[in-house]
Image (cartoon, rainbow, N blue to C red; front, top):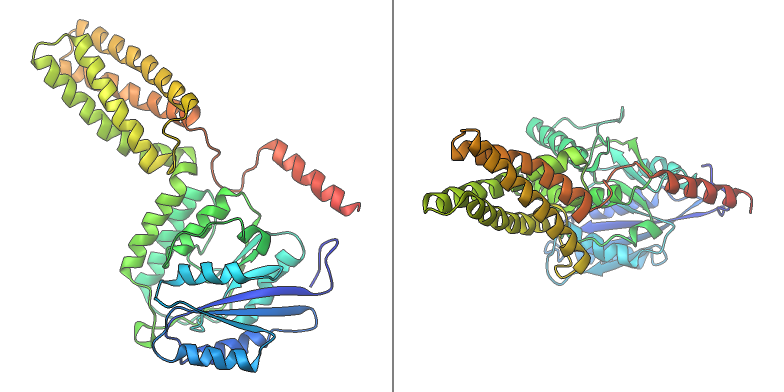
Length: 393
């Protein structure tokens, strides 16, 4: 394997194996992982038993006793899920690179050396193994499961602006220093879309490589199901919307803004029908809808942990709201004077305000860079300078 400048002759790979009731395959899985060792590749294997009840923990302890220098066993006293097991394992990893190896042998450990190549050569920060790029062996299984994986990958790519072929892959290899910067929140299979979202936001150098796949049937112990697919959709939105590409954010904002617009229209018509003037009715409706819009934007779209009392943010938001409020009143009154029905006048002003509201919130109130591989020119220059300096040391 080629190595980048300054690399030592040996690479240390931490292999984290999350395990829950895998008594039938755990021993063989570990033996296969150990078989990829050579003079250039050292292994640290961390088995995280997620409160198995089938004897997997006893097997793990036997393996740790047999290979004390390579194998560490950790155990959860309560079953928490794959994401929680990986969080535990990642925290103990000490290798140059860290990978995930499922204990069920759906993935072939011999592929790991190929996944490591872009990392060892210094070209990549993360490498994902794709079940859909490989020309190797693949077991033919469920069509709808395959279609679900493809759909989730497509949706994830729309939100991250990446062109992955297999977001849900179980083979992901990271630089350890990169992985330590990521706070993993998901406890179950939502780990996959969460980690992809977060590496996309970090604008890392992400590579894919084809892998073999030996899938299991549900009768053979496959655990992921429809509930996990729904959770994956939720995770794609939860961890991506605040930094998704602008077209995707705008589509999401249409739902938020559309709901606020309905409230805007309803309050205006109610106030207007009770005899309030067009100005009073329009202003009352607009500011009530704007407050609702702001809360929903924070909770669902732009930011999950907003600083609700940040003076600058609130000042900018009030400026945007006031400017658009004035525009809303002027446009509504103008259309009413032109002879349009109140609901048509207000609806037209609301549509204009919807587009301008999104622009104001996205660009002024909640400015964040979009996710994906794009980098600002100054970042690229800085990276190139850093590489140049490293080469001349």
